[in-house]
Length: 169
Image (cartoon, rainbow, N blue to C red; front, top):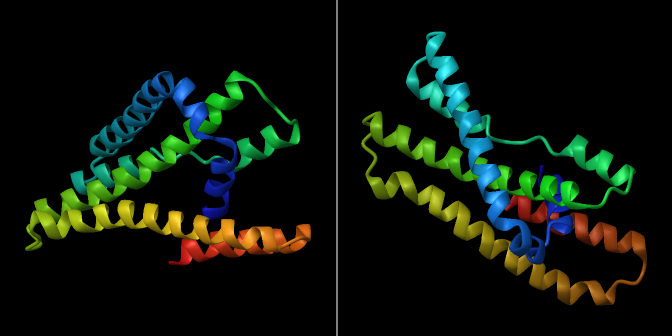
């Protein structure tokens, strides 16, 4: 998953998000939230408890991008639909990660597990801020190391190692 998300990040750049960000945000909000709502309500209708339904609803927001990205790369697809799809994958996965952590925090608080609001929300904040800081540090180190590597195979090893280090940490 780390390699797939890294691959999305190489295609989806910040200038692209500035250009299509508003329409993309609306599409992601409708698509992801409706998916979560339909899955959660469907599970409630068939008799699951609300905790399971909400948790699986949050997980359903994730978009499996690997196969679509492979097809886009195979055909060297470019254009507005391709840009929209890559942005959709990136924001869907980000929303799923944040939504899942938020739902877990909500379930912890509501289940009476003696968790304070701080104890329940700390992992969510730590994951977001810590991941951003870790990505910045690894990217900074990669920008220092990469000019010293000349062969293509060695660059791939360095890049894969940095991605795996980030995922591992």
